[in-house]
Structures are given as C-alpha cells and as structure tokens.
Image 1 (cartoon, rainbow, N blue to C red):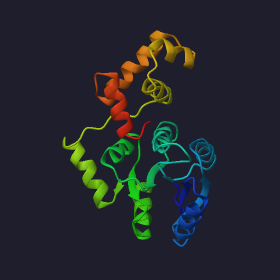
Image 2: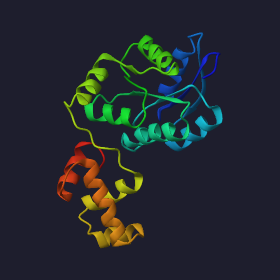
Image 3: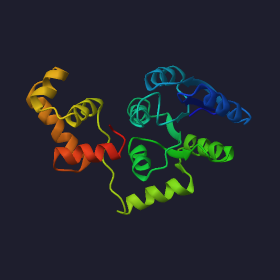
Length: 214
C-alpha cells in the first residue's frame, strides 16, 4: 500500500453514479480516485495500469448478472493481490454477500448507506481490515456459523453450459454448440452439480435461477 492518499478505482456501469461517488470521495483529503471503469474487462485494464489500494466494485455491470462483479472480485484477488476489492452495490442477499466474500471481497456495502460509511469502509480495507455494514456482517457471520449454505462461484464456461442445460440440451448438443466433446460437457455438468450442491440437472437449473445465474 502507498503511504500517500488511498488510491481508489471505481467500477460501475452507470457513469452518473461513478461521478457522484467520485465527487464525494474526493472531498476526503486521504482518498484519491485514480481511475474508473464500466465493465469487468475494462476494470482489469485500469487496475493493472493504476495498481490502486482499493477497487470499489458494483456487482451488476451492464446487462449481465451479479456474476460480472463476482468474477471481477475473484480476478482481482488472484491477479492483483495488493488491491483490496470493496463491493458497493444495491444487492442485499445473503447468498450473494457470502459469495462476494468467497470471491475475494474485503468489504460489502450497500448503496443506500451514508457516504461516511463508504469512506470508513475504504479506509478499513486499504489497511488490511474487513469492512461490512451491520446487515451484511450479520449475514456473513450467520453463514460461517452454519446458518446458511452458499454455492461456489461458477466459471464462465460452466455458466454457458448451465444456460444450455436450462434450454433442455443434451450432453451431445451442449458439446456441439460449445465446440467441446460430450464427455467434456458432462464433466462441466458434474462440476456445476457439485458447486450448486444438487444431484439432478433440474435442481441445478432451479437453484441457478434463484441465484440469478440464468
């Protein structure tokens, strides 16, 4: 981490919201916004170039599901371990909160919080601490105590297979559409069932739809 102001990158697909957050953050003497991005791909480029202390990430980027933000958190965790991912989003769902944490988020703040809470969260994660508002903290604690069970995040290929599965495609048809073998398609399906903690394809489709994967 730098010894100067906390360098921050904002990732949100709404330019107006990014502008508002940037203006609020730059009122703080110890925080500076060094970059912005609207998509996960653009964000990785900006993050690699600027190497900020904190990446403030919205989970839903563009027309995709909250998986875009979750994948970005995981990519930051794996590729840029010195950058602290902080989720700032409208989603307040126990399963999504815990999945974000498992994907590498150091903190999770909903967009309707007071700006002082966001500033406090940025300062906390930049210093190596976690940052959760009371609601999200309770969700994480409940799950860690065994009060909930959250599926692992699916890979991009597994999501593609899952969507074809939901369309009623067979292993052979899935393989043909994705240019992979039926055996490989079956392997992906087995991983999907394991990660979603189900035993049947129909159950996987149901759980995935509940989780916003479809």
